Image 1: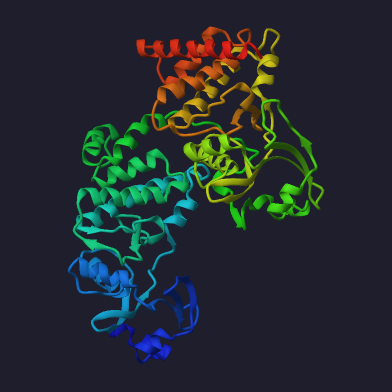
Image 2 (image 1 turned 90 degrees about the vertical axis):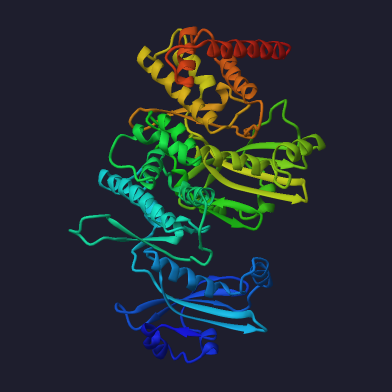
Length: 563
């Protein structure tokens, strides 16, 4: 056991004298628990001057860790001791990290059996994960937006320092990086970064491992709407780019890292206006979901579901109120209900319920081969709603989803979604854009642009709707009068791996086929296509795409004519 001189007083105040006393310490709050290890937060002293100490204990070192060290021709060590050595390496190379206070390891025949590590909490106010949550681009004020830009640049410089110190860190995620503000009036970086949980940090590293570190870090911040411009600021600062124009460093960035090529390709689109989001629906990042048995529920809808007795899987399938919405081409194994629910507070909510009872063999094979073998039909639509929300495309608000599987065979499943306000374009377009419509030409062009952006955003996310008819696009208006489109009926949405052109043509042809010719003339359809393609003039390749769309539309007309 090794104890730093600065930690002697802490050990005395906690009454720790040997290895066994540390392993049996019961004071403190457990913040992380696993089968054979845990981490406890111990407060030494009285607030507000108490010292915050983290005690990591491994009660039984897994045999696979010992074997991994032996295979790599290393002396077997427990994770706490390996983390202690990583902390020392970081401090020697100028990287701020948590302060190590003590470590201990018990061995049996040279193999580690038990171990502990005691570290002092970093002097930081919040983690990078919490900071990104606070500084979301869609909601921050101008002052906070500037703070977010500064954070992106300084984070890139800090990650570059880690790699310049020849350190590789497989656990480089936002929750393992903590921030502290630099003292006011001091020139230099505004933020100081501290690392925690560095037990897997190693020395060395190749460009490939560095690229993986950065990809892992950016992926951990994806849920916080990390914008393309923020990623570019991070990348430019990582490579040491100054305040010059971004275009000057583009080639060097793409040449250095392959992950940057995707960001550069998206940078042009990021400068274009984004899709307007509905102001009557909660943002996707604000929605929280809880799991109860076989059901996942949006916690905002838990009270009204409980008030109406929809509390478990069986109660959802017993529910027989509401209006049943049947179609001739829908099998008996599928049910759709429009449900009006009222809570104890008197507020009413319209929800849509889809239930699947023992899908037939053909549907089962289709789901197993083309979707997810161990997931149900309802889960697939639930997944598609989340995919579109992540891509920034307005769509349904998910309420609840449940499934009962037997291996890869779907027994029963259901999905509940909130009602979409407004009306479908199938009804809205003939009424407002027809010969006797009440929409002026400026508004018509604006609607065409917005619809083109919607379809473009979906296809740029590599998602295909497969039923992109006007009946599946709803229009409503925000409080400021801005029109908002939403996509519904996402059961068949998927991400094709090959034959992309074929599926792209299918979506565009479905939209073209379902749009009445007397409402939308050819000039506005060409305007839609130019906006969708992002060009001012159509090239021969674009005209070939138009011919493919028209040919597909004619096949659809011949197919639907007998109906």
